[in-house]
Image (cartoon, rainbow, N blue to C red; front, side):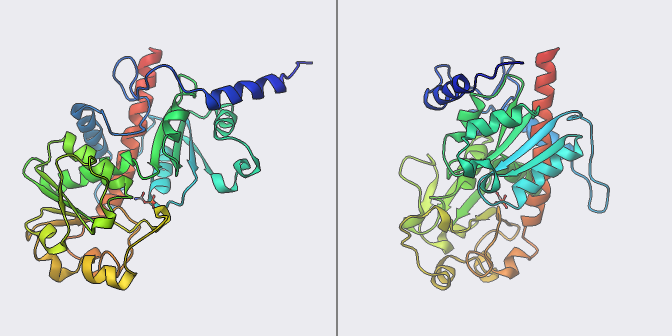
Length: 343
Ligand code: CP
């Protein structure tokens, strides 16, 4: 009978959970290929463009069958979400299955985490079931990198949104959407409107748009919802919606992230809507061909009126469509990198 060193193993796990890694973290493998996607910070523009091109190739016209492939044949992708999600979780699942992977969805609030199991023990448990990619959404900053530093060398970690800090696949799908409508980034004015302080989407969008050479980024919102000084270097901060919309090419509306506010000093929904809600009348301040984006979920009648969300300038549903394609591109790139390492 094989002896099971339970006590020894749990000591090892305790060490792993408390000891920071001594080697610098890299999302790329030794050949510069994508192994993990924890953040867009530091990714070369060429790699970003490669991911966007790859995503574009997975798109099909409305009414056509969705793209399928065998890039993830034999792989297992685990979705581990500790915060609610509709778009990101569904689209990672669709992306993985359309490329041939098995998918396990673990709602962490209903998992053995609630019985005291640590995040790493949960990861090791699923890794023992031969999971190849962990897709993780977590409210705590740093968890994604921590997991990526501890998985086996063939295993990848993809962020599905981390705290207020980063939502890399949302940044990529937003960049793809803007490119589809505008053909580039260089001359564009992009106005990000609302609760920027608590928004991981705003941070990842700013990172990717800056890497791709966007003309101007404006942060538009009340002072209480602006990020700390020093973040978003080079972006203009504007505390008037009308001024922030003037001649904008892209208007990115954000939801108020009440779940991330400990001491919210914001007006109620009706007052917020009166000052910061995007209506068709207000949108006239932007360029006539401006597009309106929103990462979702939208709060109709708060940050955006239905006439805008469902109107001719809305790109919101295209963002959702692009989300599946971008996540297919990310997963396929990870698989390709692993095949390259094995060759
Ligand atoms: N945009 C976004 O992350 O939406 P979900 O929270 O529904 O995944």
